[in-house]
Length: 253
Image (cartoon, rainbow, N blue to C red; front, side):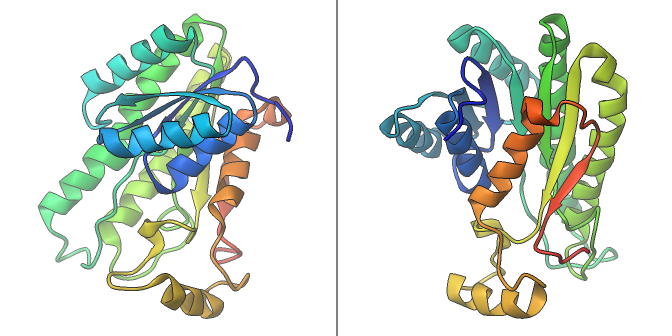
């Protein structure tokens, strides 16, 4: 295992479960000090325990990205804990589906915008404010192949929110590369997380479905998505600015 992130401090939102946890573990395995954040303390504490059991360094800070004050406190606390903020991964997001555009519940629409879009903006604003005053950094936003790259019926609001994340990433990347802040996105397709399961679907049923739906014939492993995030955050991607890296087994190819 390399140590690309030794002496680096990394913040990962939505890190209590799923992809966020996998990303946090991957950074810690490569030497980073990791702050994991989310709305619920118990899953975050479990992520920290997993990192520490593997010999890494981590701390948990609860925050709701839909609240700008929470995110500003999160960035301040990260710096208090580990002295810096070098990399941020804005992974926190929610899913609402099951309705067409004309029938989409407005409460679900607002919830998606609040967390998936405005939450990313809150996070990015607080992160850039610190990074540009302290020598720069790297930010990776987690979008989705659904919305920016492929559309399916019945997932209207989620697709719109993630298309917005992709657009936000590209626009912000151009705005802030002169500040020394590189901003990119990763757009996963179905991956090894609960969010990729249809309502009532088992993991075995998802496996069968993906043999038909994905050119690769399977979901992406969480570690594969994490590897893409770490690449974009690393010096190996030093000239990569404003990209949206799709990891979906060829679904959107």
